Length: 326
Image (cartoon, rainbow, N blue to C red; front, side):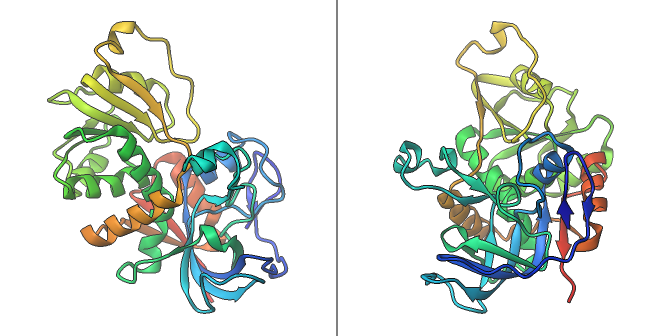
């Protein structure tokens, strides 16, 4: 499924099977998670992608062939491919262990053709072995929604009262992890979304309400997943002194001006950019340990446009994955 221009719809196109280069793997795709970032690319919110482009950066598949010098995996191995697809390893950020900020980074499904396809090529260094206890459809959302959520949680700190604004793919995974670790989760959905609030409660949230509501207790930390800048201010208003408010999105509308008193008492605003391989490894281990199971809606790959529309409209509950049949 190919994006020819921004904004645009994806078209079903026959492409040749790619050849893996040095250090690369040819992967036969089984499933690929659908991410809000894919929607931002299709809608043109994120500019300058490779065009034409095969989107998709939550790829689960098996190794079909190995390029020259590829020795981490062998044919038949089950692997996952995340958003971060390549770094130079030499810039100061890579040298400092912050490869998520690499100045020359390339991203799967943006700079590199992704997983809305039967085959994909990926750098072996940025592929993950996957837990055998989690099947293909349920592990796919962990490769971005889970990993970005994990990084946001690390930046948010150890606060016990955790607010999650926007209860989509990332939040519903992170809620399970946070609850399993003994944190108290307060979930914020679209106003009036009673079904979404019940969904959050079923996954371990202590309280759930609309994003326009005030939680029963002030928050020690909050993570904003919805791409709405004003929610950062709402989270500040709901926060205890010393709280951290983290934006986990790659794209967000402008944050409105706000009075300094909301930030005072050592409250702080943060953002999350991409992920590191260490984040990915830690998240997969946590998910396997706590038995995290994303709620998944499965669609055939030919229905990619429908999947993106369901995310755009907020009609999806949990995560959507595209399966490659046959």
